[in-house]
Length: 248
Image (cartoon, rainbow, N blue to C red; front, side, top):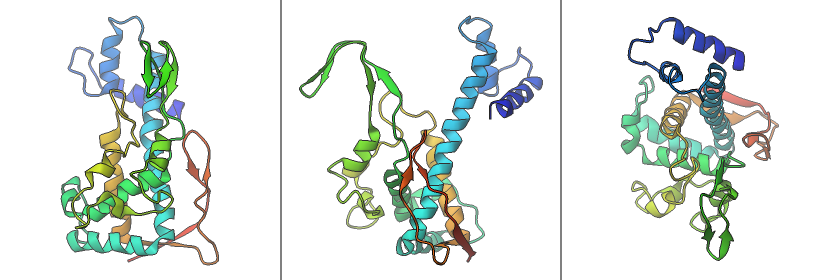
């Protein structure tokens, strides 16, 4: 991955005149290197590698989980597909402009993220001053890990958290977002250091799921039961298993 990133950075710099306005992150970083001694080319490669891994691996893993979960819950898969095809032509390319017209599909994307819960350990923070959480004192300069995975799995607002239920993100009318539940939904963390790729990830998951279900029915391979037990890694990975994708 690092070597591939090096090649991409090299290509980006070959076509750029440093006297011009930056056109991408690589250009902007290199421009700042001229005046900031803390920045370096090697660090640029590392930062770009981080952006690639954080931006691609998490979204791809969530879609892998989504395929397995929907293969296991065929009734929910069919409900999502019916809503999609009632709004989007089979050959039409989906876009984020459809979000308001696909409330159940959007709720399913949120529930896929909550249920898959792929971030095992959140990024570390350090307290700048003495503080407390409830009655627990936390001294200044303490390394703190916010376990958003526990919120996603155990918050009282997520009733029956072990069940896959897109409806939890909607009010009883099946269309209005449930604000109380959504406020507890935090797969991208919270606060000033929230995931910088949140907007892109939401777009990729929404459009990716629609595109798959527009074109394919996802089923388990005959004789094989879907296994939703995760494998602990940098993110919570699904176990390798085969699926059948049938064109519709």
